[in-house]
Length: 413
Figure 1 (cartoon, rainbow, N blue to C red):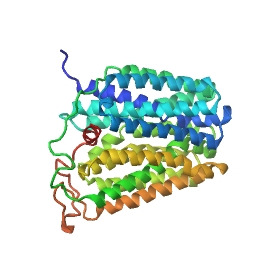
Figure 2 (cartoon, rainbow, N blue to C red):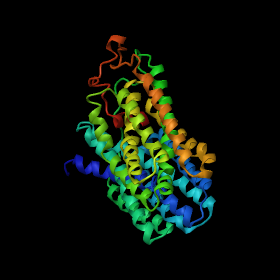
Figure 3 (cartoon, helix red, strand yellow):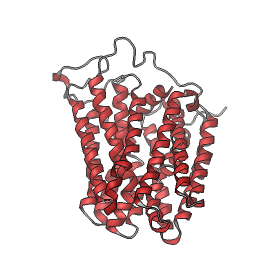
Figure 4 (cartoon, rainbow, N blue to C red):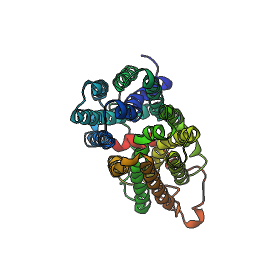
């Protein structure tokens, strides 16, 4: 029997995440301007298609929570990979808006299932290995964004919106083949004392703060995640938007590993606040300053923070030991993603500037909610510190420093 290779496992998990999120979910962002100009897609219909995908993602997440066996099934993962590739390939086969809606809805369901299965499989094997490996595996999302962005950037001048979708399907197929051998664990490891164990400290107010913050982040980040390329193309012209989306992917690739490293020196509440403030600036920048430079800076700031915010928020939820914390946070985040494009649809008649400013404002509100976490935050599980200890920014105790993906495995189990 072959010895277990952590790096090979990380590679397969990264490929699955690249297929499900980097390509299957986010390739729509750089293709959107091509569909506007070549397929006659209106701004409001474009927002509706984005919402369909986010609804599908929420449905897939709920399936994973309600049917834990699905998250441990290689058959479900492989079927979802095939379905995802098919939905991408079928997008250019029709001009019917209803068919597009259904395809993006199904793609969202498949993306969510692949994501959860990949995370549970990845972390069940990596618990005894360096935590930064999980961060690099999550970098598969950034790699998928960057590669799909390169394809759309090239095809923007020599191809059509149809060829862009077909290229995305081909890229997803390659990633699916690389992820095919990723076998989920038959049964995830559970902690001896769960979040609801007797003696759990009352952490309701801190969990409420992080829940509100993560819900608002779902609204604000997805506005940029959907319309950033189209907005940059509108202001900077040419193919700057597609190039900026490549920057988003490249910045996202190492981001989780970097934020995990930073959390060894500073507390997660502080890092979450900082990441949200940086992201708000990045989203607003192309709406207030035109040009290539601001567009690329915006893309970098957005890419460097959107995955990191998720890892930090989920880490805080797991640290607080609130019952079903990760499941509740993920659900709130998913609902926020559905509301985001719908909320800014009335602002799209005159371009995307107002939508980006609205998204930045919502992320700023998320930062304000995250700031509340610093008030008497329980740095150690089971012991709520008095104010004299609240400024301790050193590494958390082993329980508080638990890796986010481990918490995901335990929660969806």
